[in-house]
Amino acid sequence: MKKHNFNSGPSILPQEVLQQASQAILDFNGIGLSILEIGHRTNWFVDVIEEAKSLVKELMQLNDDYEVLFLHGGATTQFMQVPMNLLDDNETAAYCDNGIWGSKAFKEASLFGNAVLAASSADKNHTYINKDFAIPSNAKYLHLTTNNTVEGTQWHSFPSTNIPLVADMSSDIFSKEINFKQFSLIYAGAQKNMGAAGVNLVVIRKDVLGKVKRKISAIMDYQKHIDAGSLLNTPPVFAIYVALLTLRWIKKEGGLKEMERRSIERANLLYSTIDALPIFTSYINKGDRSNMNAVFFMKDEKLQDKFLEECKINGMIGVKGYRTVGGIRVSMYNALPLESVQAFCDLSIAFAQKNG
Ligand SMILES: Cc1ncc(COP(=O)(O)O)c(C=O)c1O
Image (cartoon, rainbow, N blue to C red; front, side, top):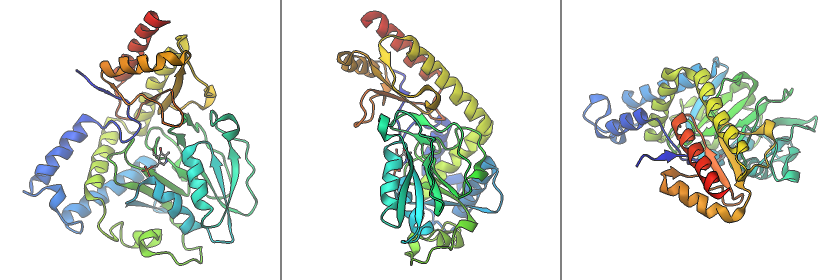
């Protein structure tokens, strides 16, 4: 049976990326060795990482004011590494808390300096993006999470500030055209829109570095990674290779313009279907709905298990809501074909007819 992969991350990857990655495990570029067997300082791998960095800059339309790093540790490491590099103990940073990940980033920052909440949507259970800011005048930077994977909300335009903007883009990176130059630091775990788990993309405007007085351990120091060309220690070679294949796929398919067109098409289909079906309800503010993760609920909670069972029988994977939120979450990342969303909508319509 055909599977429809709505996993929230790690999640669906393009078939051709999986095929190319499998081939590279057996024989990388015809060299007679696996990608898993080559040294990270060989020309073979240096070519991989350099191409990946240059594709990131090309897709984001960034110049040499920015550096691209591929680091270990998942986006969670960045919750710590960002303030460690940008914020001294006696300094202030402003954070937006529009969901679980933003709130975790905020808590980590308070270990390194004075983290303050510029805006929070906790008053309404994170069902909207709070754009009503109060940024302290002495804040070093403003941190936001561009897409709230768990709650199903997304920033559709960004606040203009006169301080550096730092963004966790883990769950909507490369899904739309934006002006990336408005950000001073961008980070994202690769495992949703740009590859396999095990690597973080970090893009830094170089002029934000070198301003803190604290001593930073080498492995946590962005500048040391930049100086070493993202090869300070053994990087996650295979995950970087899968990221390269995914970046090539994004470019070949038409770049961010096309990724955006597809994501809007998928989201419009899904939201118009669930809005029209009386079995579902959604608490998310419509203007803040995520094009990546749609979160909604069964009006009659008793039908939830039955609906999820129906999804399972029909090969729909990963549609159960996050453990603390419940309900249903349909994740629609770059590689998800429209047919999968259509299949989910058809199933929902048929279920509503039988159970409505
Ligand atoms: C927006 C966002 N930030 C951070 C994380 C944490 O990422 P990781 O598990 O790679 O540390 C996630 C994971 O889903 C996420 O969606």
